[in-house]
Image (tube, rainbow, N blue to C red):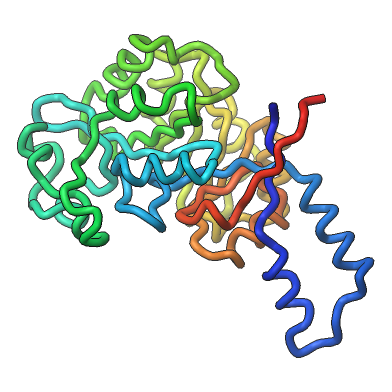
Length: 286
């Protein structure tokens, strides 16, 4: 079963078509909708459905699954005593009631922290989950896009992630339901050597706006995805990434307008805090 995803365009298109200008002809609207219905799109719940629940918590991941995302995206780091956990920042300060660097705290110290109250009182008591807990809860249910966050701070993290995946038989091809990515491209080369059958991606910030075809070709020797900051995405970049035989999942869409723009640029997927900006129409595989 493949999914065809269309951006929630009904209201957005109607409003932009009628506001301050003559109404669009029915045939024009029909053409727009037809184009969107035909375009395949992957919906990635960024740090879980982080527009609705505290990021990188089980609450956010369950919400992303409930909202029928194709993938939940998680950030993986390592504690002082070698436990793999899901957290975005390299300190616990912003998303918990604690302070300190992730790598200077033990798992038990981090586990005692409240990772939900900052988002809303209804999430009080949410814990920082382990990588293994997430794998065990969601494997086979939803795709998991694993970002190794600042792996240069955690020597051996690639091996630990690989071990956790292999223990669960998640290192074999399975419709690309496991993807690993990072801003640290050397880390991705290391990870790809450990997990040759798992798709990998390189994340690219705004400084990669002028990425060359040669650089993309080099990435393609070990990566299957080039996932850039959405602000640098153009039709030409999408075409160049596809020419290099990679897919492109830009990050991070936080509004309906941003999702519509990315959709129009022909990307393969959208990493978003609000999965409702993209919805699914299941169709039979041909």
